[in-house]
Length: 313
Image (tube, rainbow, N blue to C red):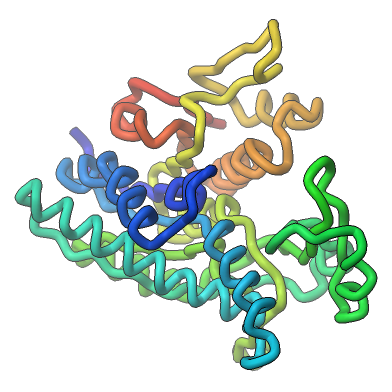
């Protein structure tokens, strides 16, 4: 069996499951449950970079900002992403290390707090659309706008703050990540899409108040480290069109052209499958070989071509 470099994108909702309180104990338990496939890949000799979302965890930080605003200064979004990279990276690294020990696999695991370069003039900076944080009552909206927040109604759910989600352009720590996996370590990186930063003409960096889509950042990192595969783990086994309708259709294989066709037909919602399909197409257009989209339960089988939706050029 050929050894591959695989970037695995794990959703933040896998660690705080819907309907749970999201306690640290629950998050550790969910993390342990989510890593079986990763252990299998490492045991088989693949080089693995694990990325993760942080939506629920960042939401908790934003609620803490609100609750403690009278006592401590609130943290900006970039710092919140860095905080969650550290805390979630700690959980994932510890749980993965323990799982590898249990399987008799000697392998180091390291978390890299990762910065991702964006364009401060990205169109999304002028038209923010990414919902973050808690829901608010209509009566609260004007006061929140007075803070300089942009508020939009999340249809059927309530009012929320929206922020920019610019396209990722570069990963600052890409060479470090590549060196670490080449040295035999499992690397956890670009958590929550990475900390958004802008690069000045002299190369210096500074933070940008935004969030980056985790799947797009994962796809970019996969290209930058010459990964063979991008594995995007989500809540369904395969990609479907006409989802949950009588004429629902599931795909074992798709081409980029098919993905773009169905994307243009609004088959893949922005809040769920849409960003994953876009990230898959980005990775392949930039020279990547293939993307697999599947559930955590089928991750190991998908690497062997036995599950999931395979997307190629």
